[in-house]
Amino acid sequence: MIIVDFIDMKDPSHRTMLQQRLEECVKKDRIKTTVVGMTELGLMQLTRKKTSAPLSAQISYPCKYCQGTGLLPSDQLVIDQIYREVRSLFLQTIYNQVEIWSNAYLLEALKQSGVFSRLEEEHQKTVSFHEMPTGSLSYYELKGKKI
Image (cartoon, rainbow, N blue to C red; front, side, top):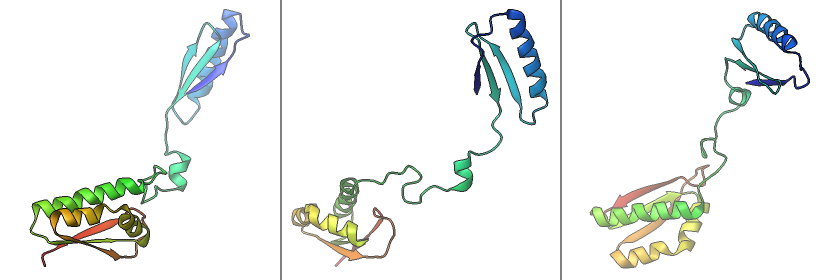
């Protein structure tokens, strides 16, 4: 949308001539353009049909970790999510042990949270931590085992 300010144009005949001339000119444009008209305040509105993706989409791609939001989940959010999944595995399966596989950063945050040692005591089951190479700070895998 384009807004053009002709605020000092008082003569109605000049406004009409301007609008007609503008409509003639936009007919030559390869992109469909509509002259909406002029308001009492002297503002003329034009709309143009979008024909291509924004430049940012043409020259970049979304981050595979944040899906283009520019934000990553907090450590606490990921810890809570893993906790719920491990707890569910303990409650709903025959697994006595759950292995958590992730990068060193996330594993350290999981260990320091202390929630998994309480979970082990509560269910008399084991949680073990294993490092794996991954570029994502919040990626993890869970593997249940019956020992």
